[in-house]
Amino acid sequence: MEVKIDKDLCTGCGLCEETCPDIFKLNEDEDIAEVIKNDYEENDEECIEEAVECCPTEAISAA
Ligand code: SF4
Image (cartoon, rainbow, N blue to C red):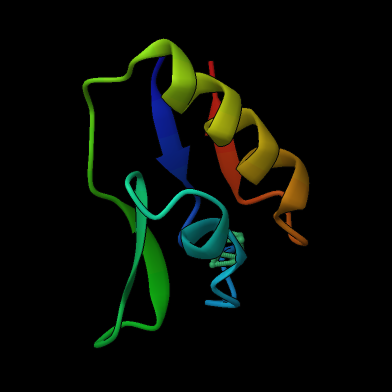
């Protein structure tokens, strides 16, 4: 699975970090989220899918 955040769509709402704090972190300088982990386990994938669904601007893609 590869997880990406479209920086143009992200509003920095923080929902993804709240949902998966091991995977997403808000970059305080840019006020957008970034992916902080690239080696995913099965538990992570469920959480990532939840974050994709939670993101209000559909900025997260995971495939
Ligand atoms: S949930 Fe979406 S819009 Fe909000 S910080 Fe995460 S990627 Fe950005």
